[in-house]
Length: 196
Image (tube, rainbow, N blue to C red; front, side, top):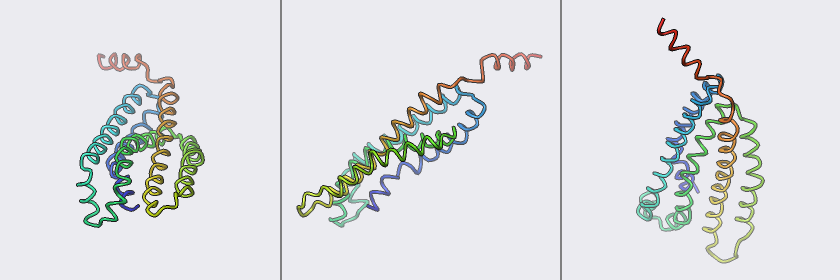
């Protein structure tokens, strides 16, 4: 679990920087209702995050067995368990990257209650049932441990997909649909002031 958790978060160490930029600059833009500029920032940061997540995904998948052996060393049992979660963790990278950036935008727009409600609902409706199925539905055969571990990480991925869906909806269909208070007339006024 420890190695899988480290691999799960590898992309976040960089993408958290994008989330921080979203929080800092996004909060400035949102507080003065420069929604057009916030939209540009949002699309740019999400593009960077997803691109980086895809890069990590492709890298993990292309490394395959070589990457697992490099990370886990020669321990066959560790490699065996890591093999069961490798693909899940690989495909989780773009989703995780998107969710981390969206979290930053939630903070920028002070959508704390919404983010909390999405997380609580996701844990109750997605994560908890998946974890229960992972731990309670055991086939009774020796060697079912790797299946349980894989199901646990699938549950974590499902929770992040849930969060990605709802946080994206909040950003694109609510926040970025607000009225921009920085009209084009403001830019014309600035040009007139410079001319005088």
